[in-house]
Image (cartoon, rainbow, N blue to C red; front, side, top):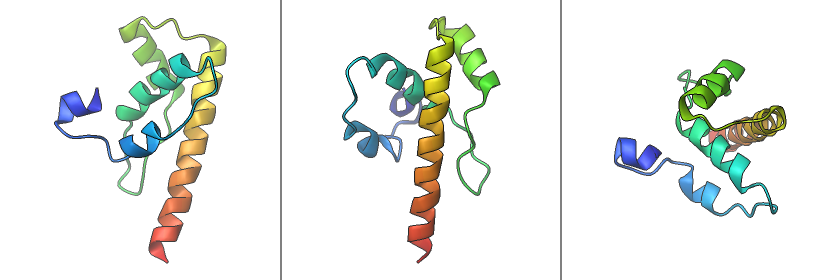
Length: 93
């Protein structure tokens, strides 16, 4: 989706493609990737995916996201943001 809209791959796409998912996670991972590809930035880094963004995306796509899906998406978001913060620290050294 990101590549279609922007004409180039998302900078994190290769990293995402390397991830091996537990069985049954493909659907929620797809939700996360769609939300991640629409993520905003503050100029200092990526912003967290908000509940209101999840709700708006769910309403627009009629995905049928469950409460458990939202919990998993938010946890994946925390893992991603923590990874980005660590990467920025390493890059500064």
